[in-house]
Image (cartoon, rainbow, N blue to C red; front, side):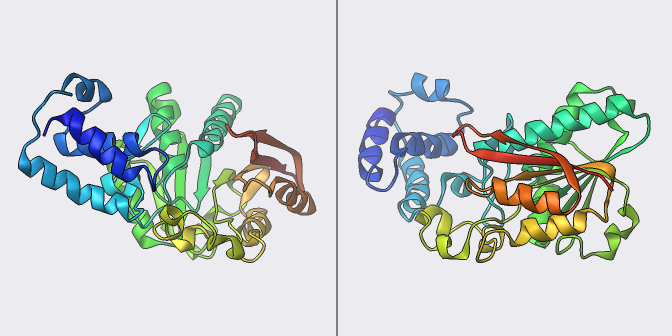
Length: 299
């Protein structure tokens, strides 16, 4: 079978369950053929596909027919120009989250300009490390060695499996100045030494209402970890807990940055105001939802 015919045939079979059927097929066959980019794929449209290659592709295709997300099939997801390893133990990074990562980077740069001392930056619910590690890798590339080493990065997650994936991505990105802590939010004693010392906390916590989870698309509901999706009945459980606890860990003037669900920004802002956060603002994502909420803690 020619490559072009394989793409046409399997796209037709997949289009009933995927709105990106052709792209899905191209990604999976590129994985089998070890193509690095679409140019290689296009140039080889007339390539004859071996039986063994078709069999390998069909094994991936069956997973996609069962609604497994492409990112879990290939164990790859692009985020902030980096390729992250992901599997079913962590959420798949979304483009909407890049506005959070960009703000995190921007705020750390400003802190570095205004202070000569160490900057402590913590990612609560770190997952695959998408926000924290993209920030660290980009800053490592942009800053001189001495300046970069003034940043202490901390990633916190309740899931040891998620932290193992973070470690794997750290190694892939050649990052070694990151502390990982297994903890239920701020519950670990390991974090006690950082009380009133953290400059900036970022978090993309679980925020989907329990009643909504069963209505999600099968590729999310059936594959992504429920522990990283469920934010309680209101979707606000983790926001409330993080805000209440963060006041014990942030410096006076420290920053708290959240990713917000599409209808949660106002609730988050209200909760932050009740806990002595000021100068609160929001930013929109690519879908024009208020995706980011940021505020400054002042005693």
